[in-house]
Length: 101
Image (tube, rainbow, N blue to C red; front, side, top):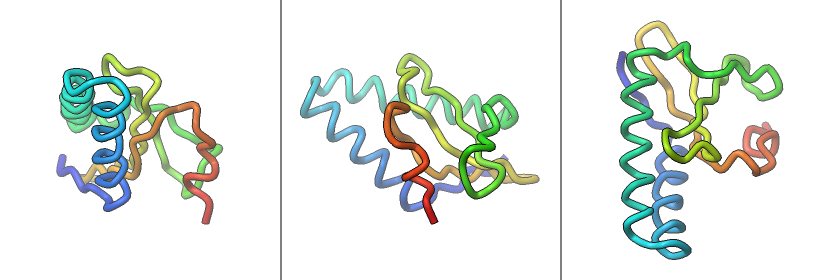
C-alpha cells in the first residue's frame, strides 16, 4: 500500500518534532519521530486498524494512536491501494476544528 502524505501532515510532523525537542528534549523528539515511522509501517500493512471517525469530515477518516505516544493520533483515509495521511496531532486538541471545511 502506497503512503501519500498531505502537506498538512508534513507540517504537523515537523512541528511535532520541533515542539518536543524544545519542550522536552531531542531524545524524546527522536523517539516520537521513530514511533511515527513504526506506526505508519503498521498502518501500511493493516490500514483497517484505525478507528473510523464518523464525527469528523470528510467521511472515511480513521485515527490510530502513535506507538509509545498514545496521546498523539494519526488521521488518515484508506483507499484501495493508498493510505492518505491527513494529520498527526495530540488527541486533546479540538479535533473538529482541525477538519472544519
